[in-house]
Length: 326
Image 1 (cartoon, rainbow, N blue to C red):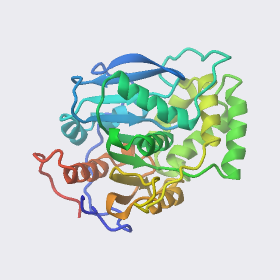
Image 2: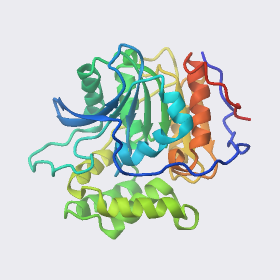
Image 3: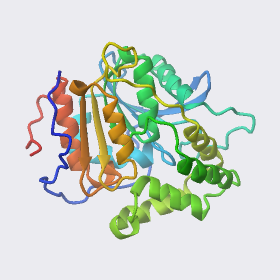
């Protein structure tokens, strides 16, 4: 089993800051987009690289985002490009969340969180993917966790960020029910915008993340299909608890190794700790990333170093030699 990368209280303070990297929400031309028909609706998958029986990278995005707005900047980061060069890549979008998506049909029954996990399995079968390394953020981390619990033979390992595996509390329920009502009008209203910025950037984002605030405030206001986001938000607040246990004698143990990340400014630290407490200790690495809430955007160097060491513990990327995390 891979060794733990750091102690649970490590906050990765000793890493140098590099120059800003290319950040764009414009669609990259390196991916081929394919609409995959599943039993619970069509799913847009953007993929690159050869179709192979080797392990691939699979991503799943957070609320209000899609593969472009959640992952493209991170996958443009040089260190991640070096890691990803060894793999084919598949970005999965929840139904109706892709850029330019038409409004979902009024009679469309949006998939539950469990069904979104089943959609992942149908995507795997469509592309003949044998096993994958998953990268999930927020809602996407919840979906990939459900898939890994149901189909452990298809999952090699997981890097999960700001993960919540418990049911929604009353405060979240109240805010999100209001958000769903607003989104159904077809607009991202100011209360919805404020909630999305809080969800992704945490408290005091106006004082801390000026560049990201500008980018995502414009994105949420102008690029999100509110009609399509409403049922996804609704299913997220209706999510069931994922009944994980760290007791390996129980059937609800998450078998794949997990790199469990959370930003120190994230509003989801407590939930991330709860998730870590449900994982088998020798298969889990928990890290709290300094100076970040959206860790892929704000601290890509730290995430890449942690991800590389995690993958090297699984036998991948062994030719990449860089300074280790202190």
